[in-house]
Image (cartoon, rainbow, N blue to C red; front, top):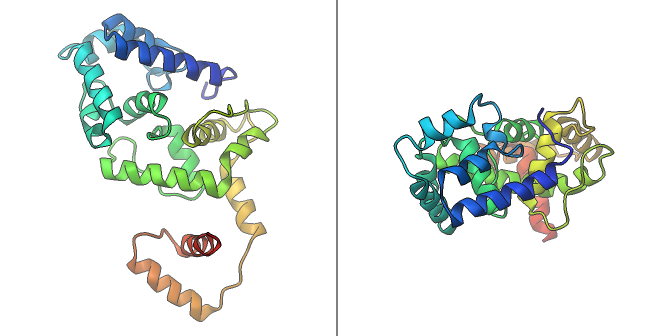
Length: 239
């Protein structure tokens, strides 16, 4: 199962469990957190006890894990310390950090990658991504949230649970990614959304101007493609 009918309640419970672990970092508090139905990164693991005892806490203490997480919440430059914890990859690290700091950290997992690729973005490899690539990904998620109004996309869906009004933009984006990933059950298809938006708002650009823009894009890594350049130019002009 990739999407949950009680997703919003699951997230709130996960947040409570994560905060409880930081306040009192014990083996059992961490085990309860990662065993929670709403902690998606550990869902494929056959044995939570094995993961907790033989991987995460085999050679590091609950206090060490909690300290690394707390420091990354206070200073994003210390994100790599969380990634270096035993048993923590991008999916686990960013899911935990995201639930505690949803305005700062985006989840980097298979659902987010599929969602961003559906919207036409080049998402990083969630197994080998660098920290720099991750923060570029977060910036892209923020841009995609605004460009495609992902909160409204979810809230206007006939099948996906609404995004709570208090939810951060990155949380709303993640809700859209999750629904897109399970598009057989939910009526959100981000690739279709991108195609509809592109098809309904075409702009005729003279070939000479297009070539000049293309040259600019080729020499400036700020822009993914010509369409991204045009979107940025129009947005800057309107602002």
